[in-house]
Length: 598
Image (tube, rainbow, N blue to C red; front, side, top):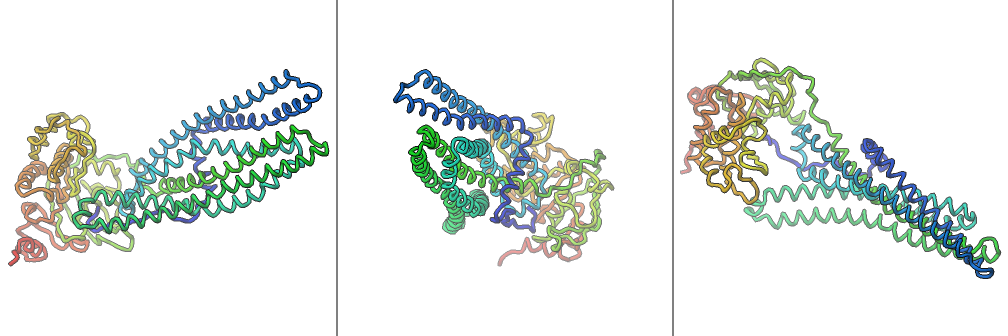
């Protein structure tokens, strides 16, 4: 992170109600590449539901045959034949729904994979400024929790949603087909419930949005505290940490409880409405049957239709709750994918292959925020092969300058040239391939020691890896490990801070780029190891343009050029002896590190 930047917690998501149908529309558009499988699954879902809706009509016929046969004799052949038809209808419905479920499960898995892939690619194209103003945990929550919710809804609720819609309207049509008087009575008894359900769901959406936001905040907090657990314990901050966690956990609980409680009201409401429908059908059906308008079989069929109708409405309300969660999660995912990426530079096809290492800064101006300029007017010329040290107090802009050199950020003004070519005319990948870096913060990944040293370099032999490790004095230690260079770095393999730093230095040696950036590379090692690393660095820096950010000024006394920065400007330049002879700000910085406390 830049030396004058502090990460602040920021979330792009708010708890404002999302545009429910608009967000689901975005999800549908995103799934268009799977439209064939989705369409077939929907057709199977419709077919299975239609068979289920038709079945009560046949049960009505069976009931009428039995009722009529009580006086004249039951036609068992016809009853058995109709029973076989009903069994085939329900069996076909089962098969169609099974196929639908399998197809949508595959679609959900593929969409989930695509979303995570798109998020991963988006992360690689986001400007570093985004990560300086948001928590890692919130980003991880979008990749894991939000994508999982979308996947679950696609795999489980989407197909059922279509089926229940067909069931709802299909049963309604069959009721009107069977008897319009009883249909009006049954539907009228459920209309109030549907209106109340719509009102309830419209008020619960904002809590689903807030729930996903609070979950992202909590994940970010946990990631941050677990990463710095040693610091938390060293400062006895467990109580404050637990108090803050409890607060955030309570906020998540409150939003989750409200969203689930409000949306959960719909299920008992629809159960009540369904039971009211049974009563209505029985009363109205009894009156009509008494007057000879309908047969007894119509009442049986209507009871089944009311059950299908009420169950469809109830399931529809539950699935709308799931779709609300999916809409909230989708909004966060698509919001992340819509973040502005770094400008595309694929059109810059002229690479700078033969790099000598001449670097020039011309009136560089930069600020992380437009109204907060960090580097105001920076100009300097560095010749190939020079060892350049950048010094200054904290917040002077030293690390920021290196970030600009690597094109991690774009300038607000001026330009940086390498071998006379402005870096803005080159691809970022081309610029970064010219440098190898060793930073204060070491980064190692889960893999073997050899893989960590080689990293992204291709065609590296074992001799080169061993030579790099030997140059930094790490070879003997590696040889003592059970698997040597093939030892996997994980929680079971403990490395000291100094050893981790040595591995990153060996990695820089293996990359063998024409220019080198060292950001306080020896800050984590003891004095004896520092001397050993300095010797290795001298070999590494020979013939290469090297930029060294150092707080311990004793380590850069032999630099060819020292740039002294303060408040974003170069205030002094020269060698160590020249700057000491002037007795200026550099002299003050240097002497302050050797003042003895009396």
